[in-house]
Length: 441
Figure 1 (cartoon, rainbow, N blue to C red):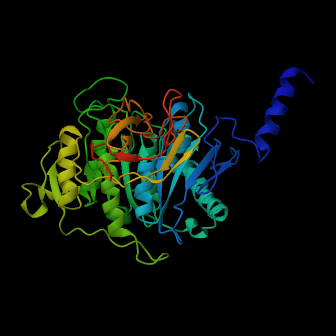
Figure 2 (cartoon, rainbow, N blue to C red):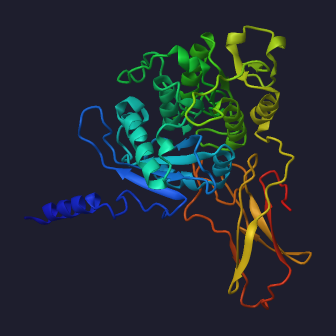
Figure 3 (tube, one colour):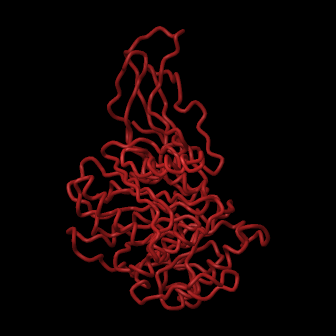
């Protein structure tokens, strides 16, 4: 046996031992309310050819889950690795918790130059693996209903292709789908002749969807790697809308392929769809999306009006579910500065351990968490993090990767007094500041 054979055998043993972490990377450790499972690559025709790990977060106080919010990364090794922190995102957890939903983030172990279509087209085994993972994660978490609840899908790039494809394959399971930069093909594409187009079923027309490309992906910038994103989005939009589908178009006015500030519209939009569509009792079918009160806007415009006042073909306008979302949409497509007037929830469980102050906090549904302020008496003594930053958009406590997931290592809610400061544990308070600049109590 030569050295190469010995290494291969050792790697195979490492991969198959259930107690080992995935060889792809070292994801954050999990313990309840987080759960994780991993599938090996399959060699069977039609099954997933890449390993994949799924991490799910279950709200602590939920008795019966009503749905699952899926946060799906895009193509490429970096984006795949970023999916490992998706379930830890406090802002997305706020959306899931409000509706008694789980938050699930897959992480496909796709090598950098491998064919992304082998997972982002759900017909290539990822739909089957996803549904099997829901069954197994339901068993691990004690929530067997996870296998049958509806899905709210968010996807970036290849993840948008996947999320839209899942709507075409399973329209009766999908409450809503947000497609950031990526869409499924509904007709043969001359640039990608090997990709089989999806069929647009009638049931998919009742699933609210939103296309969300960046303006630098072919709208205002016509050249470059991502210039073809807009033509694909436009074709998908025109096809679905011409058949009466409930589809909107929200063009990010600042970004290219990165996710930017889209979550400040995506999360309220998904909140609206889940409120309207989740059944009152688990196990019942999704409710139809209401269409009364909808607003419309001309494609590539930034002004929406009530559908009854729309001057044009209703089947060519951006579909928005109601006035509140239309107002947020108009602000987003103008400068992404979606307005929020409600303060975030106050931190809880503030306590000292030695010289370290710790706390817990839930994110503001509308605007997430920018940072925390530590106050002693009436004096601000620190912010956590000291200088919140985010090169893709509004500063966030957890940071932001390219595919809209927290940076690693995960940020901690803690502050340690410097050795030069006399320890006095009296009079300390912690406040949350959301990304709109509003402070909690």
